Figure 1: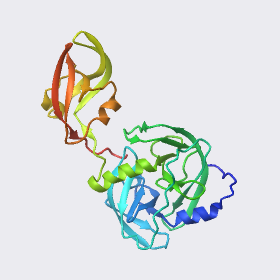
Figure 2: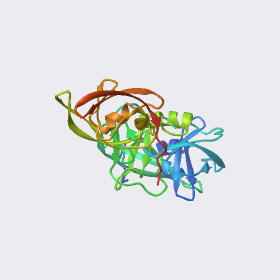
Figure 3: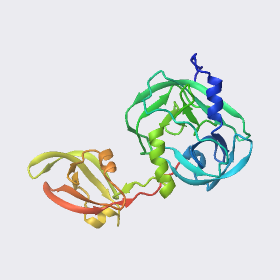
Figure 4: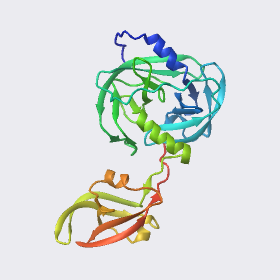
Length: 294
């Protein structure tokens, strides 16, 4: 992240307030930071805590406590840890206003030794909803104008007043730091605390977009190129070369649309074109195994 932009707001005061909610953590895999997002709940980078059940946390007071890893989601690089917080304050959240290119922001991290540190920069790119290369859905793209220093992955990113707009990640972009927006953190955190992972629907197929014929009409859909043995699709009778045209009456022409309609434990009605003729199948949606962080 680059040099700060002059501001009438006292940045040292903003950094100090946010630092009171920031913890440091170190595993054999890497070091990182986390922020007290809710009472007793720290949010950090999933890449930092993958394959561990507990992590030593260095608090602002200098005390070291053990945090329990409640779950992680590799797709969004978000992990949740819980511990007894004592008097540590929950970080103040920013407004729902969208970030803009050029906005001044800063991140606050903490080393495993307890040293607070800050990094300053600007928002370099913003866009709408996107999917990470690991398949995680993120409500908006907020990309920083540079990378992250070591130890800042999982750190809170805030506006000049010290209100948190999201969590920093270096795992989802090769050259730039990414801010995972607060709305994404909240959505993923709810699932991590409830289930230990983000529950992703699973049919057990590989598919690709195509144009096909259905009862004489040209339609777009997803050509099934493979079917996992004894997966939900196989049990329902879906075959290789079937073209999925609709799910629950909604057109399904791309893989993201398919994923968004799959909810674990539900049954979906799938309309397929098989040799140009319509077939309807009922598929019970399974749960995809957790994605590895590295």
